[in-house]
Amino acid sequence: MNAPARHAPTVNEYATEKVAIQAHGITATLGNVEVLHGIDLALQAGRWTSVVGPNGAGKSTLLKVLAGLLPHAGQVVLLGQPLSSLPGRSRARQLSWLGQNEASADDLTAYDVAMLGRLPHQPWLAAPSAADHAAVQASLKATQAWDWRSRPLGQLSGGERQRVLLARALAVQAQVLLMDEPLAHLDPPHQADWLGVVRDLVAEGKTVVSVLHEISFALNADAMVVMNHGRVAHQGPCNDAATHRALEDVFDQRIRIHAVAGQWVALTR
Image 1 (cartoon, helix red, strand yellow):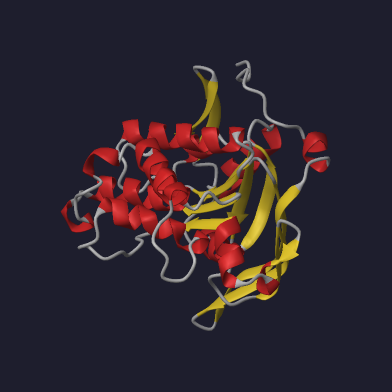
Image 2: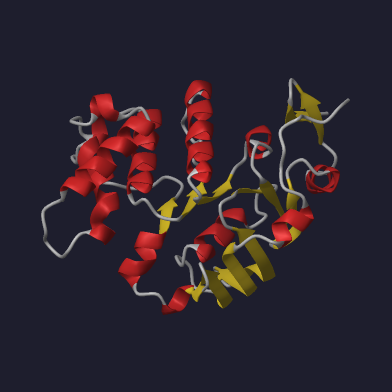
């Protein structure tokens, strides 16, 4: 079967591009168990990289380390600067985070939750500026959450809530966005909408890194990091045969990657 026509960068093309996030010798421990083992990684700027692998591979732990949310050994470099050396507000303006099962006060309106994404841009105790309101409106509309902007978060469904939390992450207008299982609770049409949002971000020059269980969605990315047992098993373009083989290997040959209707999909055996 012929490969899809959509172009993804070759390895040589990646080598000439700027790096948004680098990880050097990263190890991390949870509950006295080492779950990441000496990871070295370079994620290209202006690209969408998906992080995939079986349960327990260390995907979410790696993403939290890259976001500066977990203690670790080794070094993370964000946009050319050591993450540990960046002041909190500066880091929060450059890197936006959307985690699994994000908590937020249920009595806050959807609009107020999205406005939390603007805090790194606001002086202490200052009222939101016109730019803050414009960013929140744009983010809520991008996630199709504008219509319930006045509703408390506690009155929203799981999928509606997830779209508001995504709007909060978008409202930061950060250069780098890290998302852990962003498709949770979203129905298929809104999963497709999320894919459109990510493509728009990359078209603007933003860098997106997402942990996904939905392998067929993950294959739409520019590049893929395949993890297993707390290590990077493979990193490469999503349309590369070596990436497909690595995916099949870490899932014990229980999936196969095929080209269907112009895109790569993962089918169970």
